[in-house]
Picture 1 (cartoon, chains in turn red, orange, cyan, blue):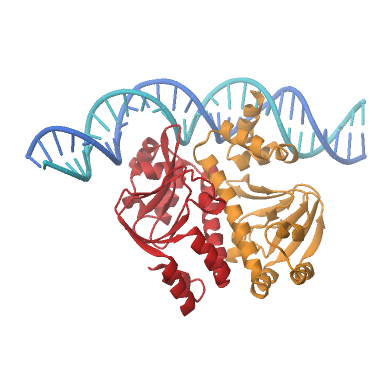
Picture 2 (tube, helix red, strand yellow):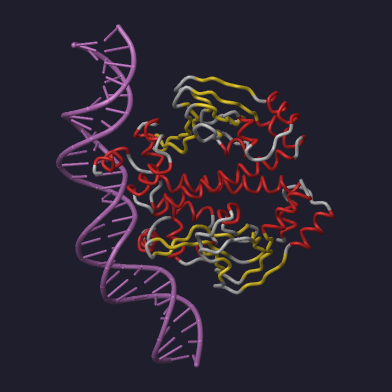
Length: 186
Length: 186
DNA sequence: TTTGTTTTTTGATAATTGTCAAAAAGTTCC
DNA sequence: GGAACTTTTTGACAATTATCAAAAAACAAA
């Protein structure tokens, strides 16, 4: 689904605004394994995923930790860097060939200013992402490794085919070995 | 700090808007231990904390789990219920005598509509809360109990005096006994 | 102060998950 | 198909954290 269509599902987008979004955003095709943003860089773009899978990850004690996955119709960015203007603490990387729509920070701020209705879109999208994060906290806070895995199986079954075990394990906050064992005894 | 002052630190608030916010919000004084929202209710209010401490908690397997704390100059609400209009999954309760400013959902939506500049405030506040949640995820995902505790000591030292050990422990995703032991060997 | 209540600490033990190493299975590419 | 590489699984063991129970400490009320 295109970015415009996605936004239209939140509030109606005028012809003028649609044209403006078209003119300030750009389509990007990237192969699997491509790094969009590296640690330490400033992440000045928001990527809307039309097709493909992207993840954000960082290193802790030499170990790779997946912070999030983003798939079709979701946005990918180092949120902290994008919003706060600080260096990114994570690597953003494609896990599959991707078709993305890129919108940079300056253009987005201009949209907010010139098309006040986009503020509402921004707010609502952020609210929804907030709720998703909150759910993840509930899961990480007191659920066992097995419960977290089963929850993921229910909520994002396709992801299990699309990402590697190690990537999924670290996303769930457990080691790959533990996840492998959880899968074994079912 | 008052709600108006807090909002002014984000964008400038016009006289008219200030008057409007005044007229739709109301001050609430509550004693320690008061329940603002209970599980299953719809949370239709946003509470800005002028003085005092509030927490959100739920029960898992009979155990009380603190989901968040909110103190002076922060907002308290069951975000999920407030935004999605679904029943709250948590109890919101004062941990100290509180002075709050209450703004209800309908009034807030009217503000958004009649004063488009408030959309921006809403977006920015949500963005900032999102970043805070993200930080907490990083902590819960792979840090040890000790590391999580020390991080809290650095970021919110006063909280340790204001909330009980059990409340803090569950917030960190550990048992009270473990937290007690962590504190002991320093 | 004394009594009753709640919170925190301590101890013994069990369960969960991590670590390190190596084997097995699956992929990729010539 | 087979070599080289990557990913997943398995095993033995260690570390971390939870559980349950009880003692100690802190707090509140009469």
